[in-house]
Image 1 (cartoon, rainbow, N blue to C red):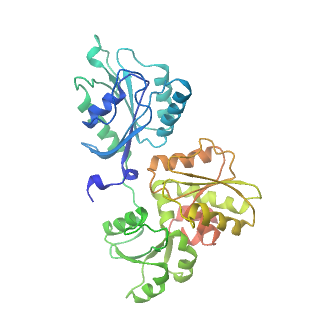
Image 2 (image 1 turned 135 degrees about the vertical axis):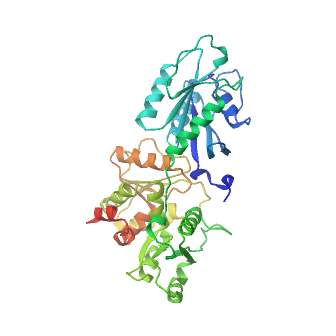
Image 3 (image 1 turned 135 degrees about the horizontal axis):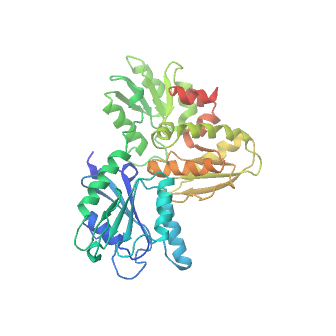
Length: 400
């Protein structure tokens, strides 16, 4: 896999923030070596967040995000500011660009406070340093720079590289649960929702993680699982299934073989498995008329038997025996406030980066709204959640 083939969700997200006319876009262009953003002396040239997935040395694969000014005005301006604040939820590293000839503004101080509260690593870039007559000694996280002369740009890249190295700890989907030469069976149903000619991202990531751990991968559909298991010379260590086939796969997998789902592994990989398991308990407490948010991180074309808008509501009402009200969101849409909902059910989040997935969970937890992902919800509704998380001792104890 080349660096440029890494999906955006697996890259370090670097957001550039600041008020209008401090030269954010000029700094972005200087750092990337590309005309990524339109540059103008007119305030508010950047009207929407601009994203670019690229390889940036010495960092490696990243997503660069240029945002509108935090002091934008008017009704449309406030919508742009709101968009900028949403970007904070997916930011791994923040760059605050200020005009060195003016200094920090109140909006800058407010943003620094947000970085600190959310524990987002950040750098303050004092742009337009070429126009400043006298300079003061800056703090450790601050850099003088000029998008015009190029001063400080390499230092900024190197500082970002250090933060990226410290920010992205190695993550494992399943490799720490197996030993070399262990056999793992992946159950990947091919139905009308399966993409033509390829496997979905969680399946790809899982295969690579098993191979990196020197495990042996066997892949089949749910309809061939029994025959697959019977054909193996030795018992597999684990079966990992698409959540939609959980019920059948649980029935067909002997109890002495570990069983889980791609969605549950994704919850551990880039979410908060413990909090999502806690959220599963609330499913049985839903009452008639309760509002349920079903949210997906991607924006795929929804089909007539779509899991989010069709299957999940059907399974929920069959499980609870209640008539519920539903709201559906996808992609970047996720309510800033979720107090109105009795339950949030989220997809596995494979197309979201870790920062955004955790941010969505934290926002729900902060207002006391239980959140669960598809795989955990399906396991709970089929009475097999305890089995599907039994390999995680600290988590399975929550169900005692």
